[in-house]
Amino acid sequence: MTTAAGALDLPTQVIPIFEGPQCAPDQLFCWDWFTTNWPTILGPSLVQHVYITLIAVVIGLVISLAAALFAFSRSWFASGFLGFSTFLYTIPSLAFFLMFVPITGLSLTTIEIGLTSYTLLLLFRNSLTGLRTVPRSAVEAAEGMGLTPNQILFRIRLPLALPSIMAGIRVSVVTVISLATVAASVAPLGLGKPIFDAIHTVFSTELISAGVLTILVALVADVLVVGLQRLVTPWTRARRTS
Amino acid sequence: MSETTPTSRTGTERPAADIVFDHVTKRYPGQQTPALDDLSMTVPAGETCCLVGPSGGGKTTAMKLVNRLIDFESGDITIGGQSIRSVDVTTLRRDIGYVIQQVGLFPHMTIAGNIGVIPGLLGWSRDRIKKRTDELLDLVRLDRSFASRYPAQLSGGQQQRVGLARALAVDPPVMLMDEPFGALDPITRTEIQDEFLNLESEISKTVIFVTHDIDEAIKMGDRIAVLRQGGVLAQYGTADELLAHPADEYVADFVGADRGLKRLSLRRMREVVAGGDGASNGASPYADAPSVDADATLRIGLSTLFASGAPAVQVTDGGRLLGTVTLDQLQDAVAGSSS
Image (tube, rainbow over all chains, first blue to last red; front, side, top):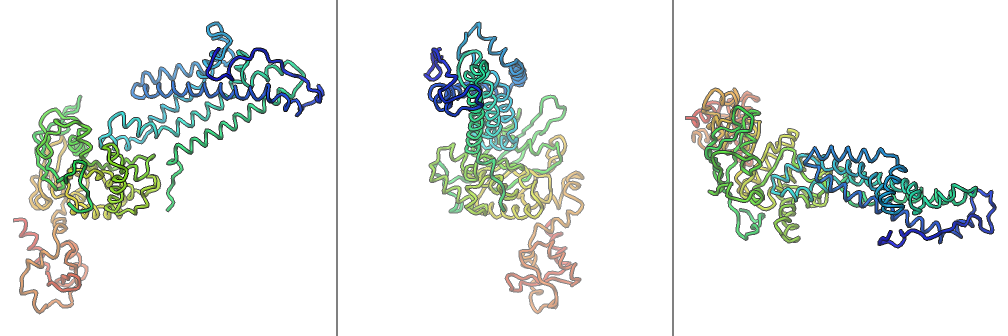
C-alpha cells in the first residue's frame, strides 16, 4: 500500500520490546518502557491512528455531503441511502474489516473502507437533517429577494446546516478513533497494533499505554471539533442581551 | 427621492413604477375554482395598494404573481409598462423589495450581512454596502451598532425593521409586503406602521401590501382591493370610497358595520376646521370646550366630544387656536364628502 503519508506505510517488522532493563515482568505500568518505546512504537502508532481517522472522516464527509445534497430534493434517494448506510452500520466491525480482505487484502484500504462506511449513517443523516431544517421563512425570503437556487443552497442552506453537520462530525470522529483500534487486526496500523501485540503477553505496560493514548486522542479530537464548531457557527451562541 | 437614498447601480435614480394587472387568472392544478379570477387593476406609481380578503381570496397569490414566485396562465402583469414575463426572473426579483410576515432574516448572517446580500450579489463595493447599510439602519430607526448583531439578538419589531431595510437595500421601485406587521404585538405594530407611512413619504415606492386586517388596510393603503372567495375582485378604490360606497353587501360586510366611524379616521380635524364656518372662528361661545390637536383624526375629535360632554371641541395647532368644531359640523364633514 502506498499512500501520500509515509506514516501509513505498513511497517516491515516492528518487534515490540516487552521488557526494558528497568522493568519487572509483573509491574503494572513501567514508565521507563513508555519513554524508551515512545519514539519507535507509541509515537508512530499515534500518528498513524490520527491519519487513519482523518482519512475515514474526510472521505465519509465528502460522500455524505454529496449524497445529502442529492437526496435533499429526492426522497426516494434519501430513504434508499439511509437504508444502505444503516445496513452498513449494523455489520459487526471485525466482520466488516475481514469481509474486504479477499478483495483489498490486509491493507490500509480495507481499514478505510470499513471505517468510512461507519461514518456514513451519522454524517448523512445529520447533513440531510441540517439541510431540511433550515427555516422555511429564510428560504422563502431568499427566493423572493432573487437568490438563485444555487445561491440559496450554498449561502443559506449549507451554512445553516453546519451545526447539525458538525454534530455528526463530532460523533463520527470519536467513533472512528475507537473503531480504528479494532482495524489493527486487519493491518498492523495505529494504536490498535500495540494493543493487539500486548494482549498476548503478561506485560501490561504496552496495553495500558496504547489504550490510554487512544482515549487521549479521542478526547483531544473531541475538543478540537467542538472548537471548530464554535468557530464556524458563531450565530448559534448569539442571544438577546437586552 | 431624498438624499438618503443613493442612486442605484445604473447610476440613475429609480422612480416608482406603476403595476398593472391585466386580466390575470391563476388556477392551481386539481382545483375547481381559480385562485385568482380575471383580475384587472392598476396600482399607480408611488401608491400603496392593500389587498384584503378572506383566506382563499387570492390576495397572497396576487402578490406572489408579481415577483413570479407563482406563475400564471393567462393575462399579463406589467411593471412600468414592461411585462414581468419578459424579464429574467432573478433580475425581476432583485428589483422588487420583498417583506414577509415571518421576516425570514438569515440567522447565520449579521444584520449588516442580511442587508448586504443583494448588493453583494450585484457586485457593490464593500464601502458602498457599508454606507448603504448605515443609511438604511438610520431610515428604519435602528442604531447603527445593530449592524454586527445576529437576528436572534433582536426583538420581533427590530427584526421586521431589518426586514424592511433589507428589502430597500438596492432601492427597488416596487415593494411586495405579505402581512408584514401581522406577527407583531399591537403597540409595536402601530409604531412600525406609523414609521412605514413616514418612510413612504420620503421614498417613493409602489407597494402591494397584503393584509387580512381592514383597519390596517385603511391606515396603510392609498387604495384598497377587496377580494372575495374564488379570487374575484369585489371592489377597488380608496378607503373613503370603500367606506362611503361599498359596491355590495359583501364589501359593506367586510369593511364593517362601523364603517361610518372608520371614515372618521381618514380625515384630520385641521381639514374640518379650515373648511368650517368662518364665523365660528370669532369670539368663541365654546371657551370651556376641550381642545384637540389639528392633526388628530375626526374620530379622536368625536371621542373627545363624547368624553367631555361639551357641545364642541377647540382645534389647536401648536397651542394656537384654529377654531371650534361642533358635532353637527363633524357629521356634515363626513356626510358631505361622501356625496
